[in-house]
Each structure stands twice: as structure tokens, then as C-alpha cells.
Amino acid sequence: MALNDKTAVVTGAAMGIGKAMTEILLQNGAQVAILDVDKTAGERLTEELNKRYGAEKTLFLNCNVESEEQIKAAFQKTVETFGGIDILCNNAGILNESTWEKIVSINLMGVIRGTYLALEHMSKLSGGRGGVIVNTASMAGLGPLPSCPVYTATKSGVVGFTRAMAAASAVSGYGIRINVLCPGFVQTDLMSNMSARLGQFSHLADVTQQLIEKIGIINVSDVADCLLELVTDETKNGEALMLFRKGKQYVTFPSFSE
Ligand SMILES: NC(=O)C1=CN([C@@H]2O[C@H](COP(=O)(O)OP(=O)(O)OC[C@H]3O[C@@H](n4cnc5c(N)ncnc54)[C@H](O)[C@@H]3O)[C@@H](O)[C@H]2O)C=CC1
Ligand SMILES: CC/C=C\C[C@H](O)C(=O)/C=C/C=C/C=C\C=C\[C@@H](O)C/C=C\CCC(=O)O
Image 1 (cartoon, rainbow, N blue to C red):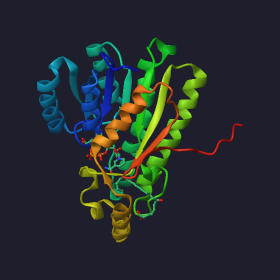
Image 2: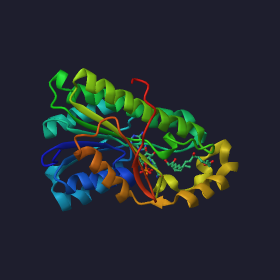
Image 3: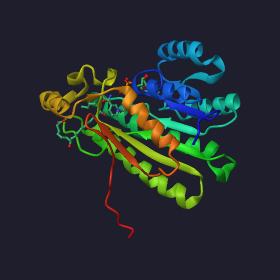
Image 4: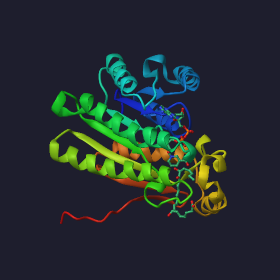
């Protein structure tokens, strides 16, 4: 998929991985709707990007992915502004085991909500032009982190939901590819104050730090490069792309249908 004049929506786009996703999509010719709950960060980024890419290429929408109403309005404004949606990056996510219900509401329910609302605009069965959805999970969605069990559960859920939706799309004829990114540890704010983020499991902070030192930390640009691969390679549907310091790898899952 060439990205010239394609329209992308990125959630959690104001900082970290989402910001890098937004920038690589703009660099490759797409126009991007920047959705984030942080109005200040979102407006600051959009002002910066407007100078580099032109105001006609970006649209900031203050949006909390926990709200069906806000996502619906953001998608509608995106379609009104750019004429449709071709790419959705469900990226917004948090890590704080002390507020585990919020982790579920944002990391898992927010991805499901965004995917289902996007189908209304993207699916060829409802007048859309098809496209691609990339969900941001984590390596924690593939290998459990005892120090953050609910975060692990949400990311495992995103992996399973993505693969099921990809199969449903292929059989149903939505014309939408759906893939999942599973990064290891990435240098962003989410990695700060780790012990406080582990809540009742903060006693496992040292074990997690040892894992971080073993697995290593990658940059947001490494994740953005993998996003571009999943967006532009039209052979990719239902894929989980894992990436960490040692490189990237498409995950092989057991198959029960053959
Ligand atoms: N940093 C890491 O080591 C890794 C992060 N991830 C995932 O990548 C995604 C992005 O995380 P980072 O960039 O690291 O975090 P970050 O904290 O740097 O950025 C997250 C962005 O999402 C926004 N956000 C948070 N809650 C939101 C909500 N309810 N609605 C809309 N926007 C919201 C924040 O305002 C922020 O701009 C998350 O899903 C995270 O779980 C996955 C693997 C590794
Ligand atoms: C603590 C979470 C930090 C950043 C968030 C990021 O999304 C993330 O979760 C990265 C996970 C990377 C995991 C890499 C390997 C996972 C291995 C698992 O099988 C667990 C192995 C040991 C557990 C040690 C522990 O964390 O308690």
C-alpha cells in the first residue's frame, strides 16, 4: 500500500510510540488524524508537524479511547476532513497495575472499540474502501510478565482479538487487513517510574529490571519502522510482529484448523 493521500488515524499519538508512528506515516505521504487524551501534548505535536508537513496533512482530535462517543466523533471528524479512513493504529495504552480496571478499559476495550468503530468507515461491506488496522500489543502479550499481570492480560487479549478479527475480515470480505505489533521494552515515558507502575507487584521490580537488561531497550523509531512494514505489505493479515534489541520476528502460533 503506497501511502500518498491515504488517511491514517493514530490513537495515543501525542507521545512515545504513537508520535513515531505519526511521523513515519507523514514522512511516507499519508495524512494523519492525531488522537490523544493529552490535549496539551497533542496540540504541541500538531503545531510542530504542521511546520514540517503542512497543516493540511494533520488533524489533532482530543479523544479518550475509553469513550465510545469521543472515538465516534473523532472518526467522523476525520472522515469529514480527509474523506475517509484507510489506516488505523490502535496504539493508546497505559501501564499501572494500581489502576488495573483502567488498563483493561484503555489497552483492551479501547482497541476493541476503535476497531469496531473503524469497521463502520473502512469495511467494503459498509461502503468503505478497505485498508489496514495495526494494534499495538507488546511482548508481554506473548510471554507473561509476573510483575504486571493485568497489563499482560490486556496485551494477550489484543493479540488474540487481532488474530480473530483478521480471520473474520478475510472470510467476511471487509477488505481490511488487521495485524498486531509486539514490541519488547521501548524507551518512552511508559517505562518511567517502573516500580510505582507495578502496584502490589512492586516487589518484583528488580526481576523486571533484570529482564529489561537481558532483553534490552529499543527506540520508538524501531517500532515505527515495523508499523510501516505491516501497513504497506499487503500480504500481511493476522500477523504478530515481535521486535526487541535482537531484531524482529513474525510469531508462529499453533494452528488448529488443518
Ligand atoms: N514503552 C514500552 O516499553 C512498550 C509500550 N507498548 C505499548 O505501546 C503503546 C504506546 O505506549 P508508549 O508510547 O510507550 O507510552 P507513552 O506513555 O509514551 O504514550 C502513550 C500515549 O497514549 C496516550 N493515552 C493514554 N491513555 C489514553 C487514552 N485513554 N486515550 C487516548 N490516548 C491515551 C498518552 O497521552 C500518550 O500520549 C501502549 O499501548 C503500550 O502498552 C508496547 C510494548 C513496549
Ligand atoms: C514491565 C513492563 C514494561 C514495559 C511495557 C512493555 O509493553 C512490555 O511489557 C515489554 C515486555 C517485554 C517482555 C519481554 C520478555 C518477556 C518474557 C516473559 O516470558 C517474562 C519472563 C520473565 C518475567 C520477569 C518479570 O517481568 O517479572
